[in-house]
Amino acid sequence: MRTKESYKPTYTISAKAINLIAEISALIEGIGLSNIDIQDLHLRKTNLIKTIQGSTAIEGNTLTEEQITAILDGKKVIAPKKEIDEVLGAASAYEQIQKIDPTKVNNILHIHKIMMENLVEESGTFRTKQVGVIDASGNVIHMPPPSSLVPTLIKDLVKWLNRTDEHPLIKSCIFHYEFEFIHPFIDGNGRVGRYLQTSILGKWKKIFYTLPIENIVWQNQNGYYLALRRSSLIGDCFPFIEFMLERIKETILEAKQATTKNVGVNVGVSVGVKLSARDLDLLELLRIDNTLTALRIAETYSISTRQAERILTKLKNNGLIVRVGSDKSGHWKVVKNVASKLKKVH
Image (cartoon, rainbow, N blue to C red; front, side):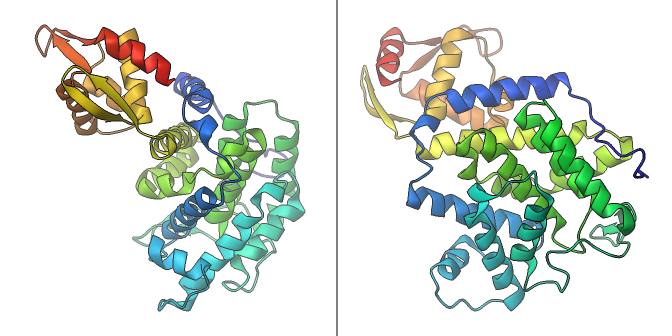
C-alpha cells in the first residue's frame, strides 16, 4: 500500500502507448475534426447526452439516450429518482467543464458536490472512513489507502499534474488511474475521475470537450475494470494508459465518421458512391500500403475484422479498389482516377 512518504505515480510508457499518441495526434489534425465546431449547440448537446449516458451507465444507470434527452429538455420521465438525479448531476458538471481547472483540489471537490449532491450525504468532501472496491460477485478487488491519507495524496497528485512534462494524453490517463487508486470519495470516484481526464484533455485540445469518450468506455466496460485491476496488481498503470488511449482513438474515429459529410465520387459505372471519413482514410492508407489485410485494418481503426472486411467489400464493389492476385498473396490497388478525385475532396 502506498503511504504519504512513498506516494508518487508509478508508470511505464510502452511502445504501444507512444504509437497511439502519434496516431491520435495525427487523427486530431486530420480530415473531419477541423470541421467540428465546439460552439455548435446541437453537436454539443448530442455528445453531452452520449457522455452522460456512458458515465452513469458504467455505474449502473439504465436510462436511455431518449430518456436523458427528455430530462435535459425538462420533460417528465418515469424512472427511479436516483437515476434521474445522476443524470442531472452529470449534466450540471459537464456544462461547467470548460471553466474547471483540474489542477486545483477545490475544483475537484466542487465537481463531486455537483455530481453527487442528491445522491450521497458526503458530496463535496473526501471520505472519512475506509472503503473497498467490490466487484459484481462481492469480491474486494481493491483496498484504497486509509482515509487519513486521502487529502495529502490528492494534493500530491495535483502537484504532480501541475509540474509533469508528460504528454497531455499520457498525464491524463495517469491522473485518472491514480485518482481511482486513491478513491478519495465514498461514492462517485469513477465518474469524477473520468470527468477530470476529459477536463485535462480539453485544456490541451478543446475538441475533447465535445468528444463522448465515456460512451466508448462504457461500451468497453469490462476492459475498463480489467485495465484498472491489472494496473493495480502489477503496480504500474501502463495497462490502463494503453486501454484509455485506445478508447480515445476509437472515439475520435467515430466522431470523424459521424461529423464528416459523406462525399460522392463518380467512378466508371458507379455513380454517387458515398464515402465516410474512415473510407477516405482507408483509401489513402491502401494507396500508401497496398498489402494491408482486414486484420491490420481492424487493428488500425479499433474495429472488428468483419467490419473491416465489409468496408473493403464496399470499396471493391463500387470500383474504388481492385484486388490484384489471390486473396492470400495478392494486394489492393486504388483506381488512379479515384485517387485524383480524393485529393480534390481533401
